[in-house]
Length: 144
Ligand SMILES: [Cu+2]
Image 1 (cartoon, rainbow, N blue to C red):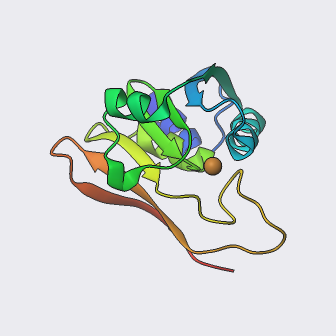
Image 2 (image 1 turned 180 degrees about the horizontal axis):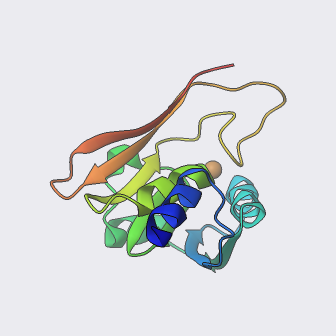
């Protein structure tokens, strides 16, 4: 029962239920939107270990991010990759999915966390990658 309640908390996005969420974020030195995404995670209760990298292509390769899902920064939580501007709520969703090895918002859609640009919000999807390296839709955000 306790466990079920805790899971419910995670799903509703209230991560401050006693657990520390630690994520490693790899990024280029001068990536402004990467820093803005890190702030979004911190605002949502994550502890971020920030790693400035010389070669993000090599980092993505090492962490198993398929080129078709690539974006700017690459995070790692619980051994799963978090590629690009994935909303904090969907990182919590990813953690509840043992079938997924990572999640991504490919490219850099305007209106995703860290990519705010006035009132503009483009449609984007959060794609999970399963153990067979197939894409699974994790979340779908409409344009506004
Ligand atoms: Cu970015």
